[in-house]
Amino acid sequence: MEFPDMNRREFVTGLGIGAAGLSAIYGDGTLVSPAHAATQATGGQLTLHAIDTHFGQTRADLQIDLSMQDADGTYQFVKSVTTVERGRTENPVLEPGELRIGRYELLMYLDDYFARFATELPNPPFLGKVPIRFGVFDGSQNFHVPILFSPWSYSYYRGS
Image (cartoon, rainbow, N blue to C red):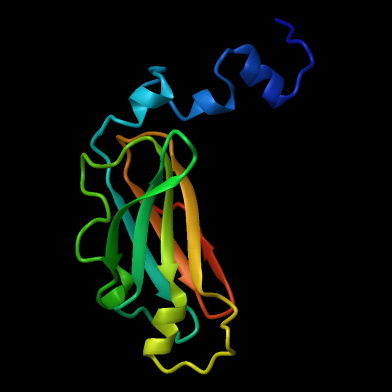
């Protein structure tokens, strides 16, 4: 079988789902409208692990706000959590059944965190409130977001 020469975008568009539609595919392959998918809780949960690379240890007291992107592209506040010992939250950020397909933001209050530990920083600090944005494409899966941070940098990835 021969396939025509085309790039990924042309291929996906040719399937009729385009980039916006990709976020509306359930893990079982069912295609649903983005509006419908965003309202469906499907069993997965969201957890995080905030790792302080400046002090070389995980600590409590990092405030993180969770928001979810609405249909207009604006992030709407969902809840605020605080890390406990070992850099995790006491409970999942979103419990099983609360995770929905869509775009999320974790807003980390790094400036407040480092100020609590009397860290010498310039004024204003290099990093203040840091947004971590990611997409959930299958609400039946668990999404774990490890975040490594310091007053000067941060990185994150989808963990297991």
